[in-house]
Length: 139
Image 1: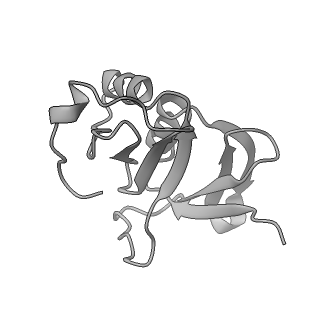
Image 2 (image 1 turned 60 degrees about the vertical axis):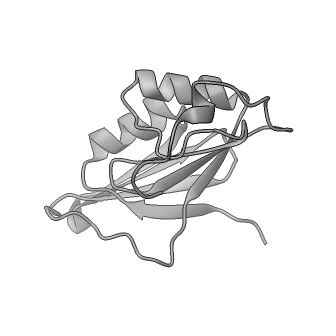
């Protein structure tokens, strides 16, 4: 058995693609437009052949989707947790759970999907300004 993808519904495809591609650094690996069903599927991954996130965009949807309690978060390993969080902040992404421990941080997608960022390997040494930053909101 092989894990293929996780699907999330998005209200604004352009805003979601900016977040997942420009901010997080994922790559679009394929796209499927279905005019008769009035939806678009966009598959994203960290690399070709890797596990994917399927963004489902229903063209006529106007109301935000609720996030079910049964879904927790997406998780990505990063080379440098501090640098990634700084880059994201510079792009306007709010760090909800700063990497105070040098290992883990949380952000959210434009549709409210929690995204966990985990330091590759061992935690980095704890340092400011992250050490003193409190968590905000929910994640």
